[in-house]
Image (cartoon, rainbow, N blue to C red):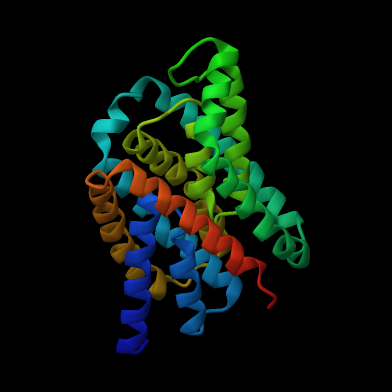
Amino acid sequence: MTASEITLIGVAAFLAGAMNSVAGGGTFFSFPALLAVGVPPVMANASNAVALWPASLAGALASRDALYKYRDRLLPLSIVAFLGGLLGGLLLLKVQDRVFTQLIPWLLGVATLMFALSGSLSRLLARLRGTTGPSHGLGGTVFQFLVSVYGGFFGAGMGIVMIAALAIQGHTDLNEINALKNWLSAVIYSVAVVTFVIAGAVSWPHTWIMLITAVAGGYTGARLARRLPAIWLRRMVIAIGCGLTIYYALPR
């Protein structure tokens, strides 16, 4: 690799790690950068997943104060995320590239709409279940499993879907939502890491560079998110979702 290629993928991974820890959509930076330096698409996708996995964990650790509140729920939620991510990954392997490409803008569009309406939906669900706090009952667990399947099936935009799901379940503090989202995303990424490493589909020279810078970006982004007003975080999530939807809807 040349110095310019190292700089390109390093900066892209830093931005991806920061974006994923704040609102999701980091793959929009990192995956195209790998393609730009000549990494084949399948290997670029695998390397990107491996590189961004620790960044989600770093983001969760950076906001561990908010995560600590839900320590009793982390194990069952992690198990659900792992199983759902594994199922989603297996489903992805069965879908043809042409069909998957056609689904991308629809998946992102629905995720963005879910988040934009999450406040109204969570209040409606709260009235139906008679509580105002977060719900982690059977319905919430099943919902989280479906979101994890989505995450395993479609990595790009997973953070937006995860944020929307947690908001609809009654979470209102975006710092807590980000902490939970980062942790569960790290679990789902773990499934991809094991799969791609065993398959030998990772370009390690590129991955090591991106892994280090993505972790730095994830930690920086999570710390920054705690200083931003909630309304700006919400607007950022919606803007990212709309941007990704339009991008993937454009003809190739």
